[in-house]
Amino acid sequence: MSDLLKIENLNYKKNNKAILEDINLNLNSGKIIGLLGENGAGKTTLMRLIAGVNSLPEGVITVDGATKKSEIKQNVSLSDQLGGFNRNTKIGDIVRFYQNVYPDFSESKYLDIAKFLELEDDKRLSALSTGTKGKFIIALALARETKLYLLDEPLSGIDSMSRKKIISSIIRWKDDDSTIIISDHYVTEIASLLDDVIIIKDKTIYQVSSVEAIQEKYHLGVEEYYEQVYEGSVSK
Ligand SMILES: Nc1ncnc2c1ncn2[C@@H]1O[C@H](COP(=O)(O)OP(=O)(O)OP(=O)(O)O)[C@@H](O)[C@H]1O
Image (cartoon, helix red, strand yellow):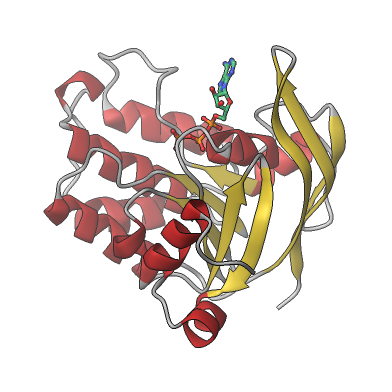
């Protein structure tokens, strides 16, 4: 285990409104970490900042020793909602785009995941159901061979069968020394995956804890604990 992600004194505003304040974080490699917070808490914003998609006006983010946005971008795999692609694009063409843009994209890994998730190369984006699109997004993100994966709501709007398949693929294709940060409102479903959780509340990181420590200290599952944090009925 080594330091993989370090965030120091991050503050982020949008249209003069504070979105994230005084964010400090240190993560080791080799874990699956849940990023939890209510709607609008700033989870997507934080992921986009870590991945170098959004510019960072204040603070320092270091990923595996890199601090430059361009370097970080090449080393972090952020799940992409594919909004930048034309709806008529075939998924095989999007795979080729990923191969060209990301040197760490593994075609063989993609093909294995795509087979497991039953994705068909000649389908167009517009023809994909929400569940199939969700699976495709996960296959693209996991097919990169990198140390940090950021999966933003991978289960959102997806039926329970497809959610199970997506969760299985995360477990199956995670390398031992890579780290996955996963945000989702299906906390109970992802809870069994998680080593640690990061809870965002009131624009900042309220707590970083192992799931084990939460169970030992509060005798609660992750979802119950997280809900009680938001209700103000437990304290750290
Ligand atoms: N383009 C934007 N312009 C202004 N404010 C924005 C913009 N995008 C996000 N925000 C605000 O930033 C805050 C954090 O949003 P963000 O999407 O990061 O939260 P989230 O935790 O991912 O929420 P959700 O769980 O609903 O996806 C919210 O208050 C949102 O209204």
